[in-house]
Image 1 (cartoon, rainbow over the protein chains, first blue to last red):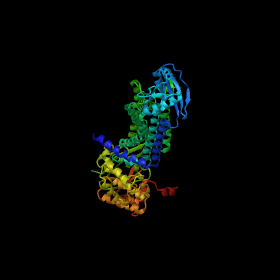
Image 2 (cartoon, one colour):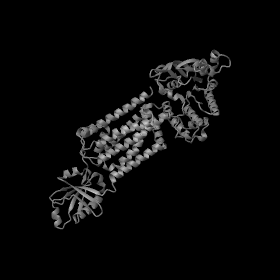
Image 3 (tube, rainbow over the protein chains, first blue to last red):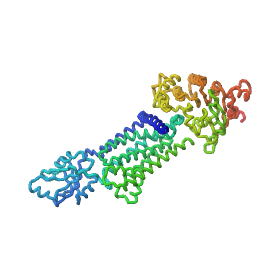
Image 4 (cartoon, chains in turn red, yellow):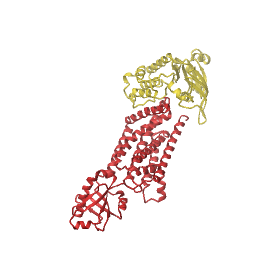
Length: 360
Length: 248
């Protein structure tokens, strides 16, 4: 118990020193600021899309209204494009990257010829669940213009959660989480260790009551703090996509732990900033490319399978599952196993290197 | 109990012996000069005695604690002034010392005490990167003294310093020894070693080639009463370039 308290105490002292030291270093401060700007920028680009006036609609026609059109432009410049679905289920499945699902009622023609106001059922994604009223008004106005008569689009509780096996915005978000967290960890953690080595302050730490393991844990704590700053910001911004918070937090922790582990591995082995750059390039390619392509349906099945076994792909899958519906335990477990084994191997390598450090 | 006990201490790097079976003892309160040319094994010995490096064979105890199996017991009892100025440059002297005070779990007012002891109180809040070499060296000494160690390892503490700062540091070392602190000193300045050390050991190629008081060594190995410790150093460590040139 005393050893644990002692370790936590030493870790906190070294970690808090490093947290403040990052803020005092111009290069680290710049890296951190750039990452924060990047998180906000990607969020703005990917989710707000302020200049995007293209609205995709998946239409399920309950009757045979023959109202299906391909594309239409409105007076305000908005462009609506339409895809047809064969059933309600098909409509939800096809809504992968679409803004709206729309059900045309079987009696739509009768209502229109009778002079009544047609009521269309609208379906939106989970991410837009807080904007139901605004979207109802917006789409009611748009479809009134399209059909040339008053139309009411009612969304109500028609909220669609993306399916686990469907590519969509959740894949992009999961990828961005991987990218942000690995980048900040690999930018900061090796530098924290390299500076101690280059300025030989590591020798002073090693002759203090802190053990090599506690020194490494202190660096990990500082790394985790800055992962929380950038990754936590991304997680907050993307929170409206998250359906399963337990899985999202597990995935976030997994990404953070693997990123810290890899940062420590790099920090333990390198001796110069040039080596940091080389390691970072290799690792980022290995980490970033697989989750970018593992959902790509144009790739051969064998290559896709190969890419899913990379820890970053497994982590991206777990985070994607946290934003989707219809996830099974059988889908989660293999990814979880890849993540746990990768983290264990990475930290095993760090511990081996640290123990070996006093024998060089 | 001896302050330092070393028995057959050996350290090899890739089959090359840097320290080869050295043995010696240092008494409590003694200033012990550990002298030798570059590459003789001085720093390797200090690294082993300060628990930074494991010996290949042999044993050593510092203040009665084994440097291998009781290294966590050794650490709080030693202070080290390294041969390089390894201080956190973006932090002030006060912040540097405060960080180490927390690691050693000692009260904060001790930081002000040691800053006063090395005459840095007035500049304690400035970033270390603005300090001169002499001021940085004083921060290093303050850091080593912070936790009142029983044994102080000084690896070339006056190298590259102005004469008046070097003199201040020598005076401080003498004071510390008078107060009962054991000092293990390496230096390239033989006059400094002669002035400070009660005993000196000459290390050459990993072996101790002579160990005694400066006066005894001069009496045994000196050619006449004008022999200095520097003459003995050159004679005993085989690095007399003038002799080599004369032979040629």
